[in-house]
Length: 70
Image 1: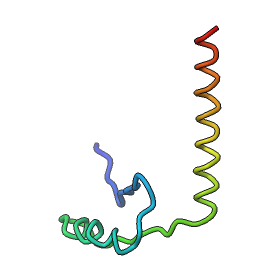
Image 2: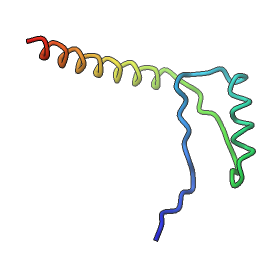
Image 3: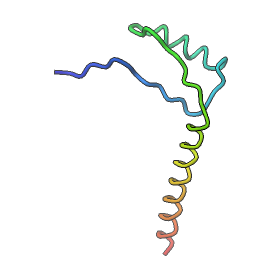
Image 4: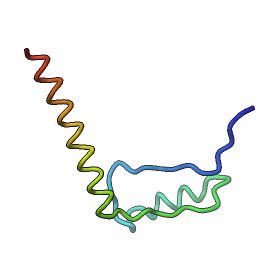
């Protein structure tokens, strides 16, 4: 038996303005089977989480680079 999805999530590479997102939202609306599309407004919590993840990744990368030079 195959899985059945009730929703798909699209994640943008960076935050974009709502008026710049309109053509993307309109295009997604045109896909057969799509009943609704709405944007998720970026907020301070999302920004903090992104910055923490970036800092953790940078720390791991620096650690690997330092170990490789040893």
